[in-house]
Image 1: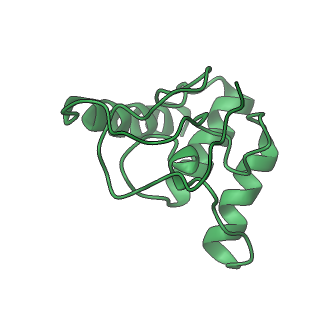
Image 2: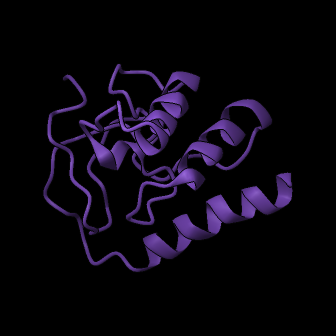
Length: 117
């Protein structure tokens, strides 16, 4: 499963990067920081999962939860994050490990400045 999941995480990210036509003007964020606490950790995966399955967690910055930058928030994002954190899987798509602006255009946004400074 490690090879297949790593491939799924990186292939979706590469496809999204290939489709980029320039920087989308949006607020800065840190990819993987789904709960917008300034860190990328397992709590972010739990936040994504609770959003998806129980609906009790709003995503203040959906772009941050879109780990593979495919323009969707789904189970793959949480699994990719856990794979990265615990098994050394593919890095989250840019902007990671520093805050930045999403280089791809998609339907997701960031409703707040998720990075200070």
